[in-house]
Structures are given as C-alpha cells and as structure tokens.
Amino acid sequence: MKRTYQPNNRKKAKKRGFFARMKTNIIKRRRKKGRKALIH
Image (cartoon, rainbow, N blue to C red; front, side, top):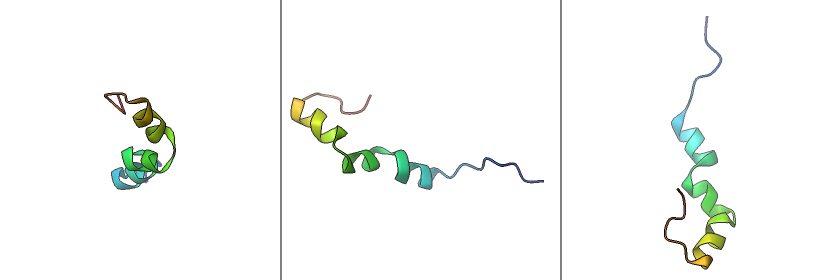
C-alpha cells in the first residue's frame, strides 16, 4: 500500500521556495527597505 505523502522537493521549491517568493512583492518590499537578510 502506498503512503499518501510523497514529498517532491522540486515541486515544493517551485511553489514555496525563494524564487516563488520573488514573483510576489514580499521580497521587493524587503529589499526596498534595505534589509540585510531577505529571508531568515
């Protein structure tokens, strides 16, 4: 029997990774503020 959760790192990264966030405004806002670390 197959278990339900079979993580796929690429898919996850595409959805929730750094570059996925680059497309939204979160990173831009933080960069504009001039903070050192954009993502903790």
